[in-house]
Length: 463
Image 1 (cartoon, helix red, strand yellow):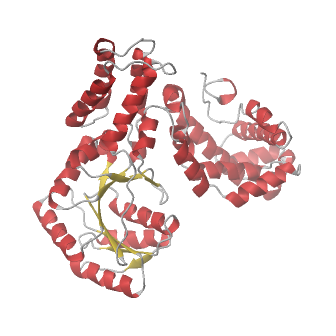
Image 2 (spheres, one colour):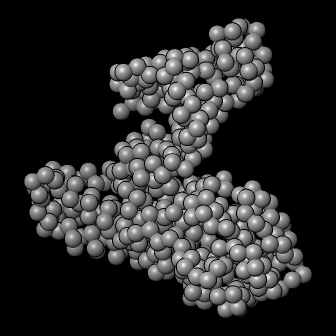
Image 3 (tube, helix red, strand yellow):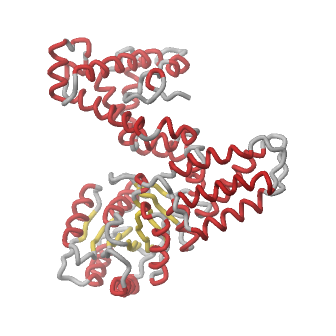
């Protein structure tokens, strides 16, 4: 998310560098460009106007401190105002209620509501250690009930059955009663969606809300609809007392207009971001971290949290001990590393959170990044086509074996050769890492570790 905005702002904010003082004259052009960048990102016009006025008011006449350039002062102001627009701080769920705490999910059809119920239930079970029950009150779409049942099993939470011949209020009341008896901490209710906001839908969901009195009412909306997401959320909020927003499909949105518009238009905080199709692809929304990403400064805190949650620590420790004992780094180890990266959302997700990568957008994104992702998947497919002995001892892979492996993985012999070559380089790097002067040598040996032609010598982008 925000790739286009990040790229545009990175170029624009350079304009004030080198100025002795920030004045209305020397920031006027920059502000005009920032305004255009926000409008192109489909940020709502009232938000853009308020943002530009606030930045201008704070920046004009600001003296430059001895340690900072005017450009840095201006960027800091822009960052703080971005945070303010999006809410300044993360607002989690308020589950301080007599169990079960009822969370109602509302939204239009196709926004990813049912999937978000599953993602949120997994988040609460794993991160908050809550006992979660989910129920579908969508009696208009039989597939929705079955979909939630399947997803509930996938994320290991309990599912309360319902059917299309029941009334939504009866379904939820029965689920609340069951949750109370079985001592569930949280009940998440999936409600019916529509293709558009209509009076019948609003009346029904308003009646349901009044009957079940949820502690949280979350509006689920597709980020790719831009500022329309904020306007739709406002229409719901006018009828329903929303407590927050879940912004879905942000991995497919290069603009970010919804994230920058929702809070200003609705007055309600974005509480979560859906960042992919997998059931673990849900992130708490931190305005300060998002502002940092927008300005190309990365999001190291989120990256650290992701590593803590998604990297298999036992495997990592086993590999470290194995390498330290000089037992080598075989192809199964290589495959494990590829899978760990995939668990963290792949190369694109990592690049989004690494500081400075926003400035390198043209080199790192688009076709180059896509090729790298394909290269990793191809590598995994090739390794899966090998025998256990071939994975443990790559040196036994002869010409005839390469031919068989290529056929089995749907690749060419040169692809197999490329994998073996890059594995050999990585094995050497791991060997250096196990020595006393390991880290410096490892960094020098990182060349060539990235498949897919990332641009520069050894596969890395040219700076």
